[in-house]
Length: 413
Image 1: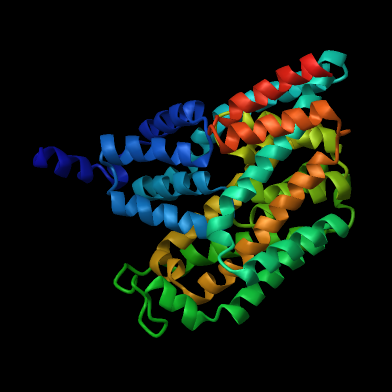
Image 2: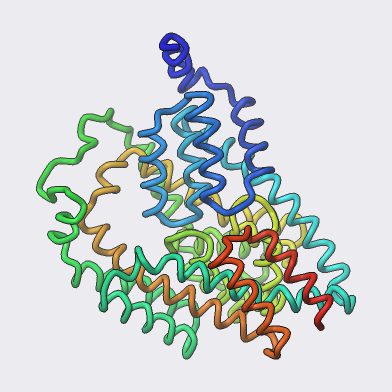
């Protein structure tokens, strides 16, 4: 058995075939229903437990790093695994393969929606989706409260973020809330205190000091790309709207680097930009995109595919999807070289304490804004209440809840 384990560990790096990785993660992407933790669990089972291509400690390091970096946690972990096994090419292959099944499913759903969306039966089903989506988003915020709202200061930050988004809204306000919450986190939850909680000494050397040094290019090129994504997103180029494919990619690649905490955190930001700002989709279409994203395997951010297809067809769907997933994965791979230093930085821990509290408020505001897109009556309240009850009390899978809400919409409206 020991010899088998040694041989398996020896298959790390260049000896792990790209075709094997592509096929393995394609199957994972086609079956990983149930949210990002379900997908990560499948990766752990196949890569660590069965194939023994990585150690459990390495996987835990990757999950830990993914939770404090922007972007979808599950895809970031997949990119990390691919990078550990076959470098940058492995990260690209694994991340692409795990997304493809959801991408093609959502393209099909979107084509059907845009073709049949005006049929009364479809409209009634979609009317059932909206209160269910609002309940799902609200439940996500509730689930984050224990880790994000540890004291009165965090609760105040969350409430202020929620009220500002509901009362004022806008992309720059969203950006200001995140940056401001991070700055307040550093000021209020001082680095010394954060380092004490994390069990680290800020004056100590980086735990990764013994790691091999990386070349300047391996840091510089990804850094320039990531700064470019952010810069083009924040400072909009004049006349960009005349080139929808470029605008789609710039918008989604920039958004992907803005918020932390997983897919639900992105909902208020995406909503502000693509619904209220750029007006690419209506509020009802946006809620439908979130609902359709919930019934596919993989991450909720695959909803970007719907928006991209609505704006510019299949090319738009591909660009929006690539934009929402690629930059965070690139950052994840780049940050893996300084894993311990980033993971235990007292300044990052302090900033994230403030950001996570504000993020809970942003998610609550997203649930309220989505809920405002429909007319509330007893049918709407019933679907909302039943969905929330099924989530909190019985832990029903989200995909089944979305389908059930659509059926209730057909029956009740």
